[in-house]
Length: 329
Image 1: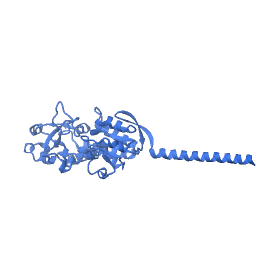
Image 2 (image 1 turned 45 degrees about the horizontal axis):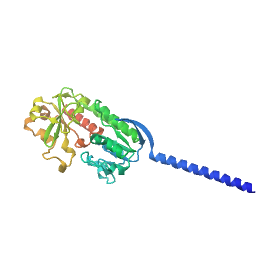
Image 3 (image 1 turned 180 degrees about the vertical axis):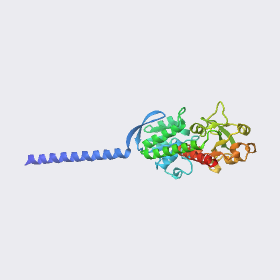
Image 4 (image 1 turned 180 degrees about the horizontal axis):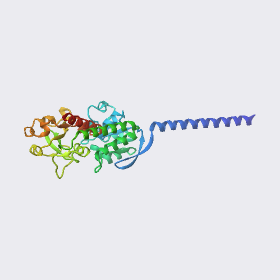
């Protein structure tokens, strides 16, 4: 009888341990599922291991804000001060604001405890600081790289983000819309009109050189625009390069591609002397005989471009470009 009791007791212990083990395995599995599985992607710094989907996300790259918002990605922290005010992130008080690149508050990254930081553009200079403050996080950087086709780089950025957040279908749709807008714009441009890229800021006009000029330059390569003016050393300056209205008039552009830098900011935040780009250009007596102005062939970038510059911005611009030129035919 004693032996039987001992056997039953031992059997019960084994069953209890087995059940406990199963519970632990199920708990570990659920925890692993909640935290996501690690996947490998490639960014500007090489191969990166990223938890997908990440549980705590920090975003500082302006080009990605609209995409993340459209995909309903929750942020723990971000450069909210650099976001266009039409994004819901700017109204979410739970997001820790890292400030702007001029006055960053990087220490808040520690409080956010991220496993992913989508970094780039104005915050690219803080890569090492962010890596030190959040050593357990992957710092993912997908800025368009120098020497690579700009449109291909936007596709790459969108594709990788889709993989990271399990939004491959959404990423594919963004790229399809982008490609379709480029094809429309190319078809609308006859190849003969000589184009000039300009940036207006604080009432001044800057020249955006083909290929390299901030935001506007890549459009020349993507659409194959014929430049009305070419200079030896164009820059990426955010206000464009110095140019006189006389030089613009002399180059006689038949098409203008224009970024209104100030339009991204609320009126009270704009620099002194700022005015709408249309007013600066179209009301200028010195430019009144320029074909692009006389024939109403000026294509303006979307108002939020300076704080966005993502794939959606260019899709909208290329469609606007096609609309403008199609109505001229």
